[in-house]
Image (tube, rainbow, N blue to C red):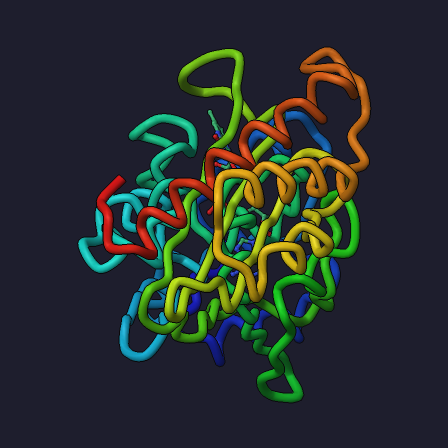
Length: 285
Ligand SMILES: Cc1cc2nc3c(=O)[nH]c(=O)nc-3n(C[C@H](O)[C@H](O)[C@H](O)COP(=O)(O)OP(=O)(O)OC[C@H]3O[C@@H](n4cnc5c(N)ncnc54)[C@H](O)[C@@H]3O)c2cc1C
């Protein structure tokens, strides 16, 4: 086990040990994988000593360190209203309180599970991933970061340092909802994060991101386009929800059928858009 004190030392450790090294943040995804012998890293690089990865700053947008926990997203007052509320909601849904104190946003993204809850709201906020490696820093839009089930653009010698969220501007609202058969300690059958920005009663920007309906998170682009430039009436929201269903490519498994997942996409898109709209209008829904 290596315990670096800075991002630079993390990068050095990764450069030294290459593909044999595995990063650990909260360990809530990694430890079960180690216990089940799915992974056998030569060395584990523990991120818990890197203070800069734990910072969350809100100043014309957000900078969220990769090791910020789900519990911090849930509890941070700066995320409690309006534009960032969907992000707080996603943090609040992860696991149990004990899991949320450990589970990091970076771990959620880098583990790249299709059902990961903290990814859709960040996608809906147009977040960028800030990556550190031996050649310095690079930035990748989060929508391009995940390449498949449990795979990302990260090289073996790189780590995710931060999520950079642009300022959504005034009159913006977001919401995240998921469906799980159990109230807690369950993973999303479908998750939907929606974000809207308004000017003079018209939607200037809409984002709808879907989880657990494809190998990677999905942007419902046609649905977004149907809302932009329009007043968001219940009929337009319902129409967008139907278009979001067409973007989903769900499978049937023991957690839900294709038909059920499509139904959930429609319902959760309608609900998250309706709530995001109320929040953009200043409501505390
Ligand atoms: C009981 C239980 C319930 C859960 N419930 C939910 C849930 O409701 N919703 C949900 O989305 N998830 C859930 N999870 C999964 C998990 O808690 C989350 O995905 C969590 O956010 C992972 O973060 P972590 O810090 O624990 O990651 P870790 O386990 O430390 O790491 C996960 C992966 O990411 C890599 N990694 C971590 N940080 C970085 C970084 N900065 N740069 C590059 N790679 C990195 C690691 O190498 C590893 O491959 C649950 C897990 C458990 C055990």
